[in-house]
Image (cartoon, rainbow, N blue to C red; front, top):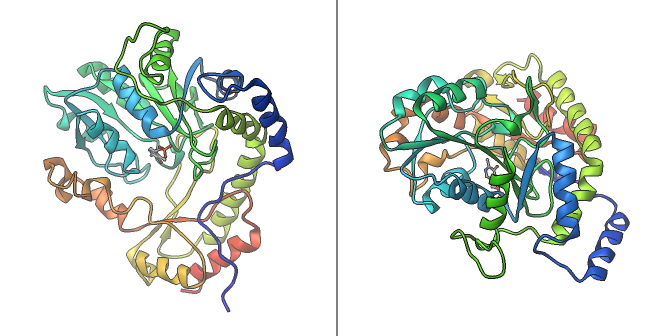
Length: 369
Ligand SMILES: *Cc1c(COP(=O)(O)O)cnc(C)c1O
C-alpha cells in the first residue's frame, strides 16, 4: 500500500461553472481566434495586473521567444544560461543564432553578470537571461554591459509572472520579456505566452509577426508565424487572473511551511532569494549537498518510492544535450557552477491544492534520511 501520489505541480483550475459564461460569449460571437473580444480584454487586464504598458499575447512561450528574437532581428551569437528549460536555447537555434553559454551565480542561479563580458565577441548581438524560478536577475548589471557593448536583452521570464523587484514589475527590464502560460506554470491559459514590449510600435510589430506578418488584408510586412492565442485560452486567462492573488497566497504559505520544516536539516540548502519585492512562489528548489547523507538522485528515488514526484529541474543542463554539447562554451570547465548545481538541485511539490499534510509527508522523507 502506497499513499496517494503527490505531484510536483498541478494547475489551479477555477470552478468550471465560472468558465461556462465565457464560453457562451465565445459561442455567441462565433469568433474563436484572431484577436477577438476575450483576447483584447485579456491583454488589457494583464497590462493592468502586471503593471506593464504593452503586451502581445502568444499561443505559447516558445513561439513568443522566437517572435521576440525576430522583432529584435537577433543574429550571430547570443549569450545565455545553460541552467534553464531547453526552449530558451532552442529558440536561438530556430532563429539561426548561436547560443554562447555563460555560467550562473551560485546564489541566484541566474546568469552571472561578472562572467558575461569575457564571452562577448564581435558576433555577439544579444543577451538572453532567465529569471530562474522567478528569482529576478541582476538586471542593473546586465543593462550596464548591454549598453556598453550595444547588445539587445531578451528576458526569458517564463517563471516570473507577477514578480516585482525594487523598480516594480520585473517584466519591464530589457528590450523585451517573454512569459509562458503553460499548464505547469504558476499562471496558466492551458497553453499560452506573451511578449512584454516597451512601446506601442514594438507591440504593433509583434502583433503582425504572430499573424503571419499581415498588416492588413493585402500587405505582409514580416516573415511572421502563426502565434495567435485563441479565445478559449484568453478566457481562461481572464478567469485565472481573478484567482491569482489567492493562488500566490497559498503558495506563500507552503513556501514558509517548507522553510520552517527544513530549517536546520544538515545538507539541505534552500537557495536565497534576494531581489524580490513581490514573489510568486512558483517553485521550491532545494540543494542536496554532499553532507546530506544520500545523493540527490537517491533522494529523488526515495521520494518516488513513497509516491512523491519531485523534479531535477534543471538537470541535465541545456549545454549537455546533443545539439549543444559540441559548442566550446558548453564544456563543464566553462560552466562549473551550473554543472555542480544541476547535480544537487531538486524541486519539491508546490501548488495551491497541496495540503500541509502533503508538505509534511515530503518533509518527513527528507528528515528521516
Ligand atoms: C516553460 C518555459 C518555456 C517555454 O514555454 P512554453 O509556453 O512551454 O512554450 C521557456 N523558458 C522557460 C524557462 C520555461 O520554463
